[in-house]
Length: 169
Image (tube, rainbow, N blue to C red; front, side, top):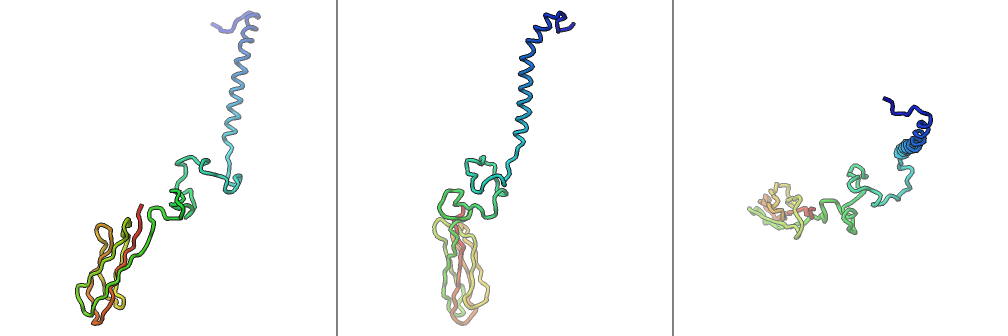
């Protein structure tokens, strides 16, 4: 059974009805073909003027650390602060305590604390004039450094204790 009418009058009526549908289909195919070609256009960095890309031009979450240059952005720029800081660690400082220990004195002890709001990242302890070993430890709560030592010399010496302190974000 054929769907196209066999009489000439019926064929011309059907052709008139099919003509608009054919034109619409042709237009849709042509539009989709040109849209695909347009979407394939790639903009390169050479085509973008320096310092013209702004925050609103970049999709949230589309950049990672690998996309940024080494040391190109600091915590202050991320957080909107006014000075440059390192991401994660801010306000780095070394705090030092010096205790004078008499000659051949045993059980010397010194402790140094980090300022409020900071944590101890590392520490050190040593004699000012002697190469003798000094034992030190970072306090379990991260508040500072304690040192224990005996002055091996028969003269007075200074026991120096240091704590490396910073705010850790």
